[in-house]
Image (cartoon, rainbow over all chains, first blue to last red):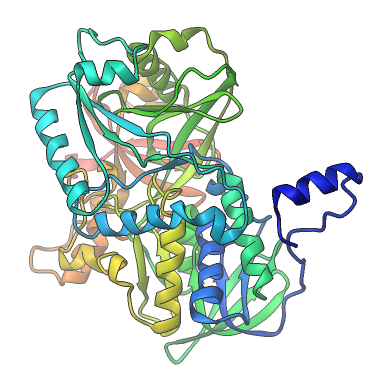
Length: 416
Length: 87
């Protein structure tokens, strides 16, 4: 079924009786050409591009819960391509281009809104760093505009510009940055993959990975054994547990990251605003809720809920930057499980086991990467070679020293 | 979350700095194989359950502590000083 405005109107006129489930609910087959473990954003987009770009349609996505029940179902929805380092820059640039065509591609309204993203700076040194970053973005073919203090004021008149500790010197505007509807991205990819014949198998937890003579031959699941010569692990915060099934120990530590949503308000924040010095960023959802977050709680955790000190810190940072939000009531908060890598950059690579691939290490920035991660993971699984824009996302780069340390803080687990 | 510092008693999480896995206590010899150093610095069991890690009582007695805790429930199982101030 193709979705359209006309379809919405005609269904509305006739009692909405014509809608059908967006995907099938198939039982697992005994064997597939490829299996993707994990039915989140990255896993579903991997399946979609395996089918679409590489003609691999005899494949399955195995999800232990329901589709999109992990970080794609709870995040702060920011889409941007403002990276600095070669290796990251071209990847996120590719991802943003895929985002820009995603709704037409998937025939699904992912509510991609390029409302502009502004990173604030508060010192001369920080301005210099942002000039370099902006030039790097422009060299990559993306957009960046340096705003001085008055330029920021035109966009964001409600900020406290004269804060004693962090007076606002200006900002780097990334006009093509913005937000998208997180669930819709998962659902759109799921529907597109299903339409091309991919089996999306829910409530199917992988309990073992079968390896024979150094080659993967399939997986054990709560719904029986399934054979496949290619298996991709795309499970974000749970990467260490799944990789351990194949005897691997990953350069990943899972951390907690909290985020918050207020009650719905009239439109008040029209951009994505990032206040790096306070570890605070905010946007307003289309429903009106202010969506904001801060930094990690900074200890390894799978609790999916954080501690109060970070809640307090985020609220303080928000009040410091934009005192007007103080009267908004926070409706809910949550903690996501982040697969943190030592250098803060992701991994899309082969493993030491033939046919076993891994896509992980998305840290706290996996949402914007969903299209390109799937695109590149599909390329890797289909061809056995890294895609050109993901060629530096190597699993062994910490041993070889080819790290991708975007923040320039070092390559150690507690630094990003 | 509170850690029960063996020197100071139960203290708020804010007083402590999390350094990382207790793997850091097993420093390889200087001439150890590259793999041993990679494992020491980067590769982790990262368990969903009981783990041991190193915390620094930065705003208290400044002791390095080995903490056994559950990463799923936030439960703290034991806190002991790191012998000899390693790490």
